[in-house]
Length: 238
Image (cartoon, rainbow, N blue to C red; front, top):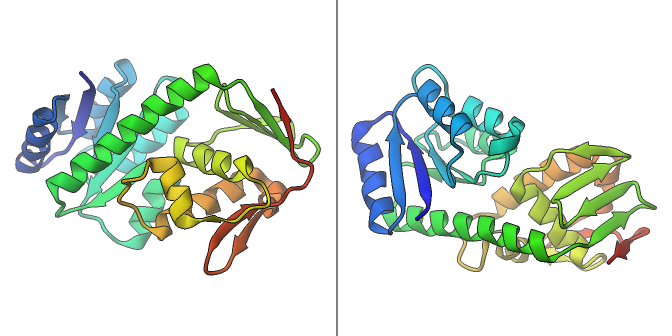
């Protein structure tokens, strides 16, 4: 039974989401204020958060930001469901660490499909972390990616990556020098049935490059196709 927290101030929408989530066999709870939601999330981190942006007293952007800066909630998947469908809002939500973004009005089937994908990916992270002890170093050790601990170290400093960003980096370093299309990246990060867009990939790539600093130049854009990681000084330790 997965604990899903629904943060939605409109009662009808909150209950609609809860109905469909419950029908899938998950345990769901609705909270209608931002402050109350953050108090619950920080005290009892759920398996996944379905998050509206326009909330009383504390908006969804701030909740997402706090989750990504708080160790116990850092890796809890976040699915934003909001009427704010402008590109700037979507980009802001993803850059703050949301794992996916769905605009209102939405199809309940799409909502559940995305929820399933996020939960499957979160479980996959755990299983891969237990089984995979590899350490990948790039650019003569300036970039270190620990696939066991899910950490990224840039020039000796640990840099906080969201789950999406880490998986995109993992996808690129798994085949250095090879071009990965946006569809391949989406499949690797979210699963074969992900309902995402190329724009989502581009937003996350921008965030990854920014966090890598000068090493962000190693991620090359192949126009009309996708992205590749330069093979510069790539080493893998078992």
